[in-house]
Image (cartoon, helix red, strand yellow):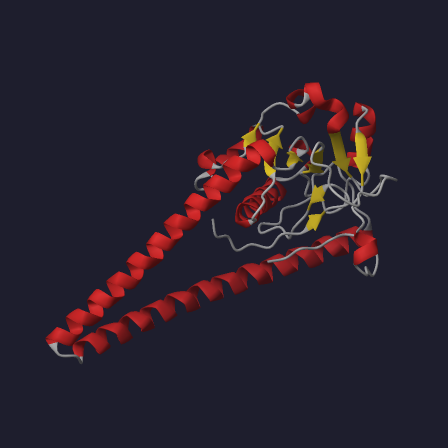
Length: 270
């Protein structure tokens, strides 16, 4: 799967955050400070500008495609019949080779992801926070999940991904993704606590509020990432949830490897 999207991942909070493609008002029950309101307005302006730029790029792409089509037709028209046929055959052969290569790559990807179900590191995206997000924030999270699946599939040793608490609007939006029903991942309506009821001691929730620093992955553990796009409205929510459930927590050592100007949030964009 080839995706182009912008993903912002709060790894230490066990959360996934990214710019919202369709910004919508924060729920009325959640009051915002003046500073937060300014940040929200700035974010909305950024998203509007981003959407405008995306539309311009789409138009430019269409113009480029039309230009190339005309250039191809003019090139063919200027050639003798025999040379024109050779050029057309050459182009068809090139397309065939590309299709074969893509088919081979898809087959290898399926093989890697299938093997990951047996030997890959188990990574859970906890989707039980949808009631705290707006429609557009859920859309943003869904896009990031799509991006994560695509990147994971290209890895030589991919993880085995789980989506737990996958129901309601979250499930509806995921089902709209092209090919989602064929994804090689685990999709569970139930929570990870129930999905791994016999392995509760192996569960580790990744959150920046944990005092345990995770320096390397343990293949016997199941690491949980909170699926929450909240613009930092719900600080500490993943740590509180883990404590209430009595499961282990850990945080990524981001500060030890990256210099951060303020909060230690890992922002990944593509």
